[in-house]
Every structure is written in structure tokens, then in C-alpha cells.
Length: 173
Image (cartoon, rainbow, N blue to C red):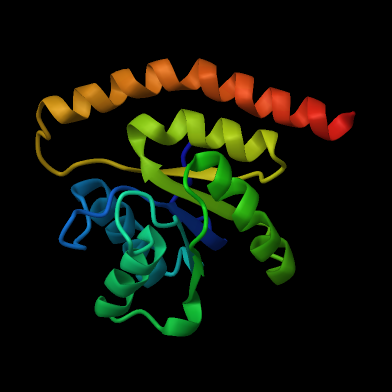
């Protein structure tokens, strides 16, 4: 899979949401995605971070938890943007697009877990947002939940293709 080279710089990185725990803290997936985005922003590779994710399993939207983490890391609030209504990856793309277009951002990264990247890129590209991948990997052996996530993605991809292609056909009709 193509990845961003170290010399590339991007207008924005779209950080895709992941589970917020019942106590309101970030899941490991959410934390590693934000950590990667913050690191890229600090290194000057990304000008802005767009946190994308609504309230899915917790009353606090995932994007708000992500923004709080980025603020705690010391990033300038003017570099942080929030899309807090989406409930899945298709929604991340659809609801982030107006914000991206309004700001004139064209050089984009998608930050998500490695196992989710192929499906996320497919969705964003088919819905008109060309982006490069920046995959978040666990620092240590994550155990069986990581392998289950890869398996889940293998089953989710065909269903996602059907949903996105149906959506595009309806839009053409």
C-alpha cells in the first residue's frame, strides 16, 4: 500500500474515529490514531487535523475526545477541526467533504488503523476525496483483538462496496 513519503506535506489529515470507552476515555485505536496525527502535525508534515467521528457508543462524539487529546498535546486549536456527526466511515467521508472543500484543502491524508485503511481509502476515493494513507500501528503486540479487527475488515469490505456503489448509482439516477 502506498504511504506518504517523509518529504511530503499535506493540507490536512483526516483522523477517523474509533470507540470511546464507557468512561469517556479513548480506546487504544482512537489513541494511536490521534498520536500519529499529532506527531505528523508537530513534524510539519500536516497543517491541520480534521477529527471525524460522532457519538456512536458513547454520548461524547469521538471527534471531541480526539480534539481534547490533540489540545492536551499542545497543538494550536486553530489547526484542529471537528466533524462530529458521522457514525461510520462512509459518514466520515460524506460529512468531512464540505469542510475540506470550504477550506480548499487538496492534499489529504487519512489516518486510521492499518487494518481499516484499504476500506477507508476505497470509500474516500469513490466519494471524491483523494487522500493518501497514514496507517496507525500498535507499538506492541496487540493480541487477538488486532487479528479479529483484520478479519472484521475482510468481511466488511464487500458490504461496503455494495453500499457505496448503490449510493453512487442513486446519485446518478
